[in-house]
Length: 409
Image 1 (cartoon, rainbow, N blue to C red):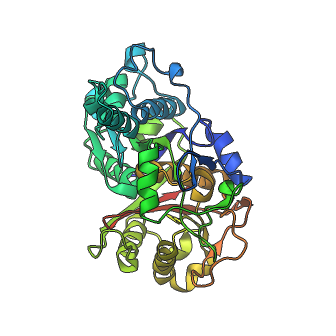
Image 2: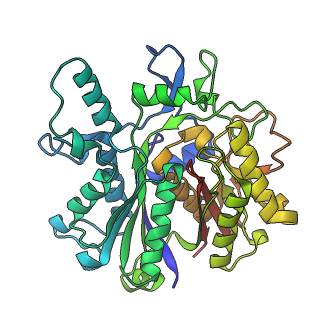
């Protein structure tokens, strides 16, 4: 059974319009800025401009953290793009409510609610009574389900940086198994608060930068890379079978032809090339493709010293002599690392690249690291009219690896 992407919706550091976001990426526009100047150590992040009043009344916002707000908005936009809508407005979800599922990735839950509660408690103040339901990681999925009256499986996957990609993979499995007809699948993350930023700084994984250089500080696969920057946002895909989409006259952006999941089972934070390779091979096998058939990879590419090297090794090992024909870029240089939501945003970008035959850049690289040995896309987007298949990698702390492989309709 062919599973297709019939809708894309996002709240991203580059806005909530699919085409405007993709065009900004093609131009190499960075959404990364310096944040929290009061912190002892300079920090950069990519935040999303978001007007919650477009989706919520003041009364509805009680106990709804930003992570759930942007999830609801992105899911709404994805359904609209798919030609579907809200049950509460008398519109159609494309299937009976019991045959629709919500599959959401979220790594840290309501960081704003939790940070607020900690600060209030430490100061002896009033902790908001709805803190618990606001910060629980499954809140975004629950709010999306309530908004649309979804009564099928409503599931949350918290698998660090692979969360959203795993959610999309599991949604596709449910469709192929005949358990549901329509899936709203993706992820949401909103963790740009001082406590979280300081915690990541303590791990020494965030990019360093000089004054005024924050926008260019994330340089995946560059010889002088120093780490990633955090980002926030939400992205959802509407998935359904090809037959179901055609029956309702829907347009398909792309086919989700293959998914691959694996675990390194070696180290909590250090990636493993053989483990990543297993996920890559599984996605290719499910899609019935050879490495040479895939023309573009939106890499996990966190711009950490070890992470980029390991991912490059995995790609070179699986692709072998065909590695030169695989164009590679990590769009995290421009939109930051959305952690639990990054797999969904990067999957959406990969689908748009495939649909439009244009590759987003691997930005800010003056000299690529020769040890990586990859054919990187340049500093601005490039045309790829013959692109037939493209993939998105998400490799997580904990050792979980997820690969999503898309083909043209």
